[in-house]
Length: 147
Image (cartoon, rainbow, N blue to C red):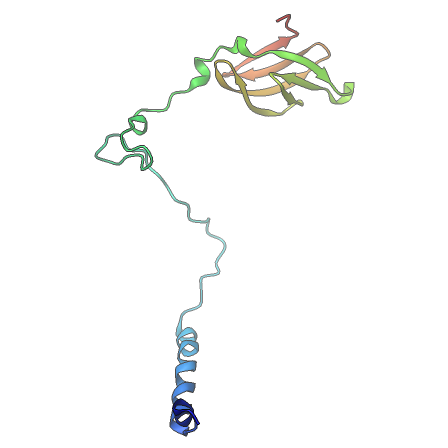
């Protein structure tokens, strides 16, 4: 018989092992029940952009000054003439407009990549020879281009 087996035969050792095994179970039973109230909105993290290097920096680019500059709305400076209406597809009851190689149905909105940057476009209506869109807060009619 091995030395450790001799100790496991004694009732005191068995009692000690049983107590050690039961301690985590007893501790879990004494814990208050988890809050299962789902009426409150989930807690979300909130991040504040630093306004100076003393408030924080970009951990990946610590020398960058980008976090301290205010974001600009690039769509106001974008050239909306960079949007090119390339065609219409689909049956008359469900037409699709192709603008800068992006397909739009009526009501669709997405960012379109142009030579002057991204422009957020919402398609208002697709006609047989044109498309009515909203971009930069204004409404435009795009027609076939001869470019």
